[in-house]
Image 1: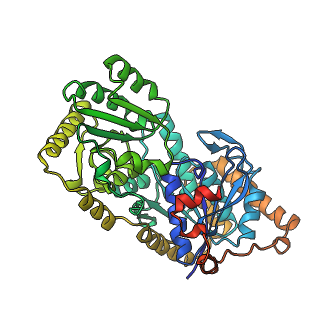
Image 2: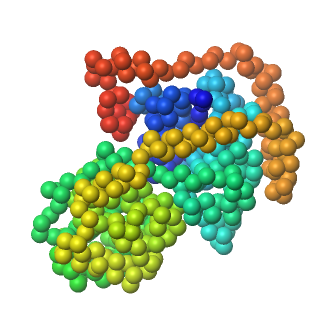
Image 3: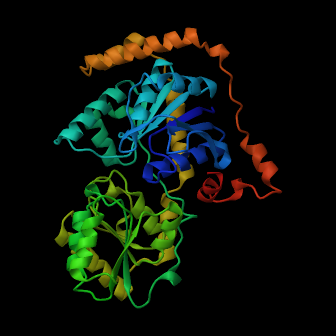
Length: 452
């Protein structure tokens, strides 16, 4: 059974991150398996309208303004006619939303359900239960997933978190981990310095990533080990803290801040290092440590969220999220590195390649699609009862208004009057490109850069 899938999220190229890479790679694998896949996101600067990426992946950049943190304001009224038009024109059957932070994903899923389409949601994050922001986010997620056909989490810890905070029945939640393109992340020990030991950090410099811990670790470990250097990639509001530690300790020649990196640059930075340090305070699944292990680095990471599930024990040093434990983990990694008691880089790479690949993720996601496609379509009354069970009367009014708008649009802009888009034939493109310099033979990120 082939499906016509719309991936929806506020986070997509040219923005870079774990969610963006997940959507792109999953879409590519689903396309190669014969499914129709499009991506729906908001505009990024002048990037508005329809763009094509590798293997004919069609991306709709909606002309909607960003409200906060790269997310749109969920007005429903402004975007509903455009989203409905796209779903009908592309003959979409399944809406797949990504990220609890994405207002556009939740909005599209509500509209899709009112159009009798199936919905799947992938949760990429972990949330607490105590602070105000988490309480509000959890309530919004509970409302959004009240009528969702199925949810996907990237770790078992993430599943427990989603089931508790969104009150979703565990039978409606599957665990499908992320993967890494091991062909793009390969070791190159010749690029490592023989005179120094380099610790690599690649992360957004925000509180959730434990930048405060990282700064204290750097300040304490550098005086103990003169041969140690830090290579830090990423940017964010906490960058000033690392700059201050560097200035106070006179570590300008030992702590290098690379700033924001393109994804194509990450492998080049990783292969220069011996150890990868992750100080996150919360993670559902950390893609960075998998990429680092694929490049043959020894990984030192905090034991939080779903991280203990990601790599086998011989490839990672797990620590508590505090300075003494992180220092102990780093010192253990340094001692093993000096004694040669570590997994060789290429063996480490092959272990990661055997554990994670995107085609396996696509096959398991495909199974979820098959399951939801066979479910019965709910009536409007049953959908409203699902929302009433969550005790949110204002949202019932929003859903009712959206339903009336869709009925008005069915009269004003009837379905039979909307042109159906032609499907992109991947097979014929590959055949036609076999004698040319087509992007389809490039690495996905290289091709994506050319087509942008």
